[in-house]
Length: 381
Image (cartoon, rainbow, N blue to C red):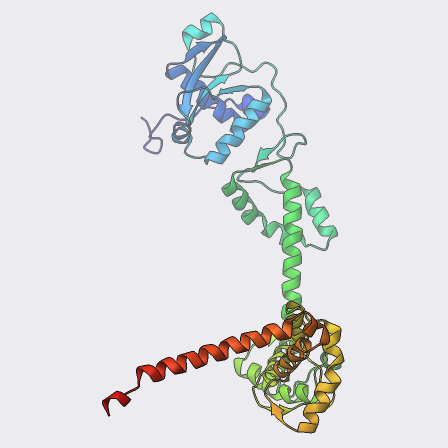
């Protein structure tokens, strides 16, 4: 009586074959041998070929994932026991043949068991040099790789705890490698360094204290950058209050403080330079570089402009007037002085300017005369 626990035909595997080429390889070879016996096999080059698709193989061996089937197929091909031909009419199917020519009597009988392997190749290891392989579901690193990890201070328990995730990741990717041990070794070192960095940063993190002050090195860096010490001192209480209210922890409060002060100082400088408040000209005033950029675009000699700076400053200091932008005033002064040079008069610049002014005046008077003519009502009196 057949047990209900075995609802289908069981797989029968030769123990000798499994011990010789491996259990997984023997199972796949047996399944393909049965397909050759019970399905219409094609005879070609003295071999029996059967066409099977990816879904056919998954249905025949539901206990394996597709990556396992590909891995075992590759192993059988390298052992010289399996031939695969992709020349089918479908893109997801292949022709399979056991690489052992049958005699005429064997072909007639169509035995379900594979023909005895006379000279099997030795079973290859997963990390055998010279060939790439897929990672097995039960893969484990060799002891030598764990020893190498230990030389970098990595505990064996830490390395072994990474194995399940490592295997799952590479099985999902479905890629082959020449040495899974070497890939695992690099993966462990990377994870160990990340873990150590995380632990180190966590051990140094502290909350902001109400009596916190920046270190002397941080203050020296800011002062050397041209930031006022008084500005730095005034910013400390605000910085402490902000981070105490947020309740965060950090291991580099000095670095955060330096970045905060630099941003605040840049905003302060920009507000001072562009606040629009009229001021008298300072004694040592100098135009900004943007002024000289504008003068170069106007083809005005830079040295000519620089020679006029003392005269400009002296005049406006004596005048005691205030301006919102001394740069703009200086630009107007230099353009006027450049146009009144003797060389400019000789080239007709002044005459051209005078002619333009006369034309404007003539046009203005013409418009006024026309307006008076149209609005004249003297004839009605």
